[in-house]
Image 1 (spheres, rainbow, N blue to C red):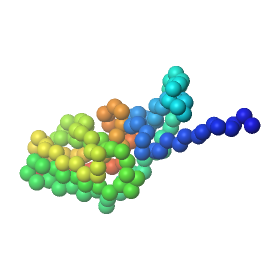
Image 2: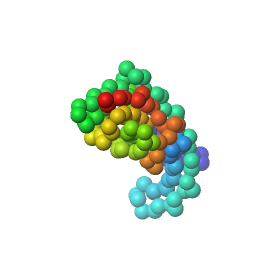
Image 3: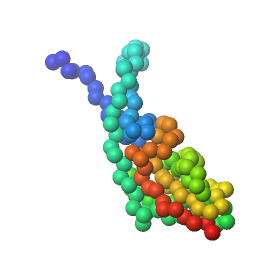
Image 4: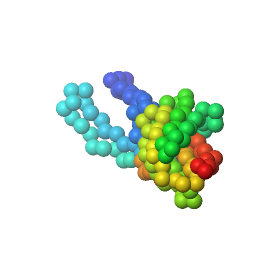
Length: 143
């Protein structure tokens, strides 16, 4: 039997790297012998499609603004590895603000009239992507 001794490995989703802005994984592998004495060369890089993210409903996202401190909290049943936060202050375009490991994030704002924020699943490049976005707030007036 030719398949005797062949072992299959399943990689848990939680250990995959962050996705690209167009929601794909770049993956490569190498084979190591059981005694760890021999190692293969790295495989070519494969591009795999990730599952499209499920958006958060407005009822699962809360925010509060106290002076210049903005606090965000959300409930995401998918428990992703990280979330990138983008902020739009006044009439400026969205800018990457930071990455949250959990489901909450706080920051100080310099906005004077309005603020808007977006939450997306964490990616390898910190740019706003409609494909990865799971929530975008409406414009919040600060006056």
